[in-house]
Image (tube, rainbow, N blue to C red):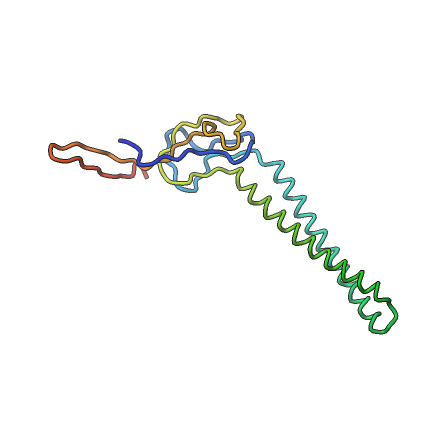
Length: 170
C-alpha cells in the first residue's frame, strides 16, 4: 500500500502548541482540527480592535448630532461656516477611522484562523514531529509533519499491473 498523495502540515505562525487533537496513525476527515496553537495574545488584540471600533461608532453618533446642530445653526445664520466645516470633518474622520478599525478586525480574524490547524484533506495522519508544549515555527517543514493520504493498493499480475484506489477506514 502506498500513498496517492501526502500533505505536510505547517504552521503559518510561531506559537506554542496547546493541543494535538489526533493520535498518530489515526484517520481524519477534511476539516478536522489537528493542532491548536496558543492564540491568547491575538485574541486580546482582536478584542482591543473591536473595542476601538465600538468607541469610534459611539463618537460618530455624537459627531453626527453635532453636525446636525451646526447645519441648523448655519441655516439660521447663527453659526460660522468654520464650525460647520469642522463638524463635517469630524464626521468624515470618524467614518474613515471606523473603516480602518473594521479592516484591522478583519485582518486579526484571518490571523486568528492560523492558530487552529485543520486537516486539508481526509486520510490517515502520520506522526506529529512536535507535541503539546513545543513551539511551532512559521513555515518550518519539519515542525508538524502529518501526512494525510488516500491510499492505493497495487497488485502485479502476469500480464499487467493493476492499480485499485481505495479509501482506508472511514
